[in-house]
Length: 441
Image 1 (cartoon, helix red, strand yellow):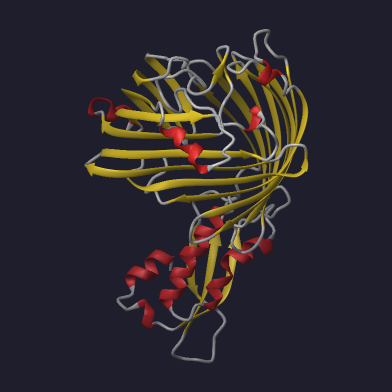
Image 2 (spheres, helix red, strand yellow):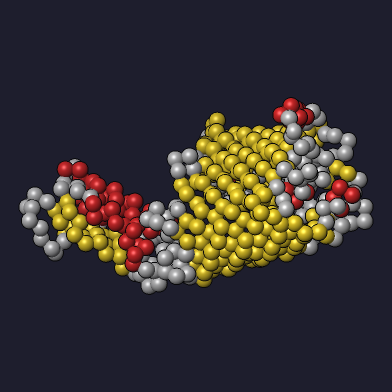
């Protein structure tokens, strides 16, 4: 009998049916090695009754799906074993999984855009590279309208029976234009990252080396930016904790998602600093499909050298952060160029409402929303904690409403925004504003 039929047809308590699993068979393996599959289903053998067996089969099925090498439809069959045991009060059974491997080679395209910049990317992936759920991925992207090019080669490998533990190796190069600060940057990087789950969330522990060159300064760029031209080498260790309790990633009604990042640079190279940043968002459904959210972002950068490098500073403003301002249009500026800052905070409050007229076409992917954004960005060397009190001075505030469309993990917004509080040097963008991004305040 199939697993579903056996669980429903027998009018018995599964916990009281003593069982012993004699064999577990997985059919459909082509490129996948048996040892990585065996780690995901091993606990089925340890089950002592039908309830435990069904529970372990469910867990094993989820584990096989998380390997990302099999198609989602995994058939499970549970049969009476041909091998008889010595205990007449025990049922001896065999479990059979039927799987179908996904295509090993995949390709995809993605785009991200705002009012003043955007990028398009192409990626190629070789899934299950060596037969143990590894993945090699190549990504190349181009920025527009300001030219920039990025190339990245990544390798991922699960480590143990818990496939949430994995390692990432990455090398890449990028050449990007920063038109709002008047310079270009060439970067060659290499990194190692270990991902470990915990009750708090997923921990990302890594080490990276970045060789950077700043060049191509515009004629009117101030000396504070121009003097940072040339080469620098950053060697840093980083820890990131991601906790996600949302009921749905693309259309959340409850829960929260939080990201805490800590970075220490100076283990070699000529760049030295400590940096911490937090991004968190909480969702709450106050009525059917009427949802509110509250976001808080904040960050601190403490340079151990004389001054911080502009490549490491925070920037604020634009359709994905504090709306109603231009890209990097909020905070310290010199000669109309954005120079970034070492400390910032930003908050956003949203009310999401359904659009019944459009729901037949887009489902719940398209909604209306009203929002309030506020934030501040300052330049300080943080010699004393009291200097952070400057963050309370001259906060910026904007309000607006518009349409929000969620496509996969990306968000597209068309808003009409009114800046309410702003500083004389800020770059404003009142009126319609378009934004596309993976992270939106």
